[in-house]
Amino acid sequence: MRKGVMRPGHVQISVLDLEEAVSHYGDLLGLIEMDRDDQGRVYLKGWTEVDKFSVVLRKADAPGMDFMGFKVLNDEVLETLEKDLQDYGCSVEHIAAGELKGCGRRVRFKAPTGHNFELYADKEQTGKWGVSNVNPEAWPRDLKGMKATRFDHCLLYGPNVEATYELFRDVLGFDLAEQVVDPDDNRIAAFLTTGMKAHDVAFIDCPEPNKFHHASFFLDSWEAVMRAADLITMTDTSIDIGPTRHGLTHGQTVYFFDPSGNRNEVFCGGDYHYPDHPPVTWKAEDLGKAIFYHDRVLNERFLSVLT
Ligand code: FE2
Image (cartoon, rainbow, N blue to C red; front, side):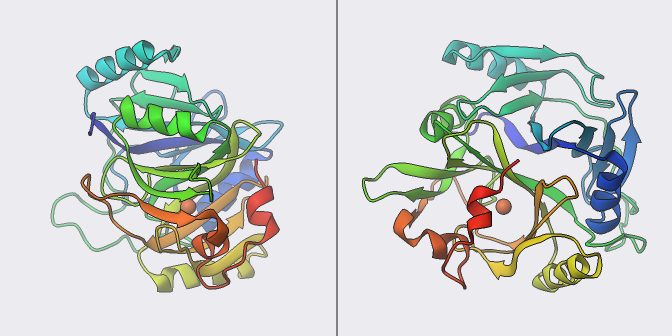
């Protein structure tokens, strides 16, 4: 049952070299730089996003994901969910409004997989970038690179996928859209949604906590995915796999790495989910086809390279 969590709102990614990362996410993915703060963090977003930012880059000694944030409907929902998290046994941390520039107060909690998540109700709305909100043109003409439209989801690896799924389902109101089960019917992957998308966040079982597999950005078409792959080659960017199609979610995709080794995805298409839909199940013995629908075999890199 929905609890007022609207969508993935932001992800903070740690990078080794800030300006290299800004060039990667800005010039190659086509995200728009929106702001910087006195901690040196850089704020970016896809051009269709109405809120001020969705990606924050932070210079650090190691790559990875610092946290992922979900925007909730309003402050009343935020207060309710904060109490529900605490009643569920989650300790929450309060982050004051303005700690991220333009973002209201955030309620942070750690999932059993070891990842930091946060909820917030307010963020400055700067509108879609480069087009008006009245009689908007189809797209801005001066987009760079892959012209990524929006931050879409994260895929995360860690232990206790089942407990994390239960937390997201019971407290935050996410649905299980897709899953991977092993021959003993244990769930080893959970693709969770809080709307109609095939996933807003996904978890894959792994002994090591708090591992980041990828942050994903939405493109308009298969042609745009192909063009993104061309740009990966033109810029000599490290590619992981693709362009291809997933079995899980059926999205059309290409994977590559930022200069710090964080994996990115750009994709289009994908299944939709309504709350009355039963979850789609993939069998672990067919994991190759589930992940890479055409090759039907996994590359070792996809499973083992995490930040
Ligand atoms: Fe993905």
